[in-house]
Image (cartoon, rainbow, N blue to C red; front, side, top):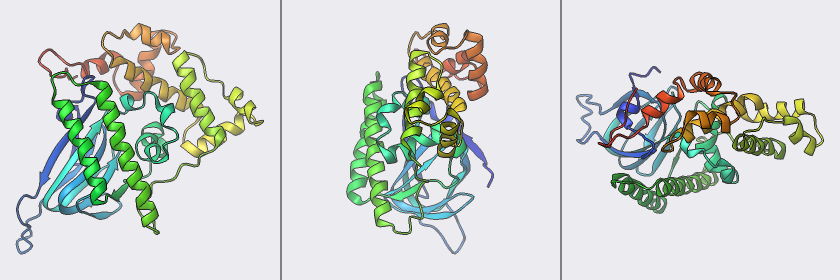
Length: 321
């Protein structure tokens, strides 16, 4: 399944001031005419960003390369960058799409490890791209759950509409939304004995999660990562811990540390007045050139280009590269 277009920064306009955006979409406003074959669709596309979609009203089909699933009020889906999907046979389908900057969301992730399904649905796809499932997580909300989710969506939209939105309020509201969705997902697993829509469950081991936390601490302190120190706590070798880590995440500790260091740099670049030189030194890079090379390899742009992309001008617009 090939995308016909991509949802990009030009469409979504995320920024350091508004790192999460909600958009309302109505597809197929009239009755579907089966006699003429008139089909109301959103053609195959993918995104630069992570997306959560929630169906409020109407009906349709969610189509990926692997499946077609019915969309009804309360349906939720979560897609990662590059995952291609489409909407078909839509009749009065009203959907909210929530886009967010993963690097902004991932700051302070240590506090979120214990939220199992928040981690599985929203964090792990960004943290471990190599381990992503090809199946888009897909589940349904009860009417009460949908009402709770719609309240959080309304709060996100209202805060984004203000002239000076609070980053703290946006973040806390997005996290509340994700917790509501994670609880609904957990409930849906208990209700669905077939578990046909389950995301892969984390093979959580104390050793692996200790290493994940050690990575965050090393980055925050600008220190190198020592796999051996973590392994010694569990009386295993560094090589054995590295194998366990790769089995659980699809990546090596060194690769994960490098990825998280760049994502942390990206998050810090969103702060007003942040200097690339200071960020490079704080995160343990030898110099700004070292940071720039690694940053471009991971995100496809330089640190300065990244910051320009998400900088808000005096007219409220972002400066696109």
